[in-house]
Length: 70
Image 1 (tube, helix red, strand yellow):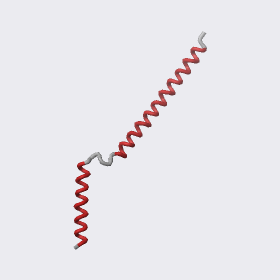
Image 2 (cartoon, rainbow, N blue to C red; image 1 turned 30 degrees about the vertical axis):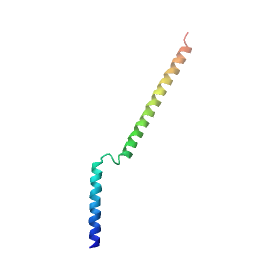
Image 3 (spheres, rainbow, N blue to C red; image 1 turned 90 degrees about the horizontal axis):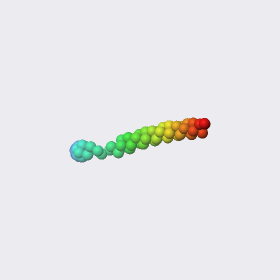
Image 4 (cartoon, rainbow, N blue to C red; image 1 turned 120 degrees about the vertical axis):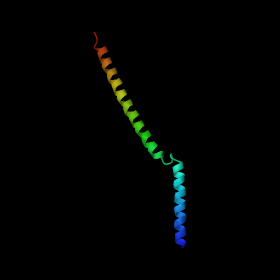
């Protein structure tokens, strides 16, 4: 009989916690948000590197063109 009471108590506790989890939909989304922010940071760094390389290459080309001008 005691085992049945423990099982019933555990089931009621699980139902109570599940009800609380449904009321807090944002709970547990921290890891997902960190991954998304990390992806955006990596993309921003990649775009910055591409822009820096393009601007530096154009600046060097312009400098060589100007120095070779008559």
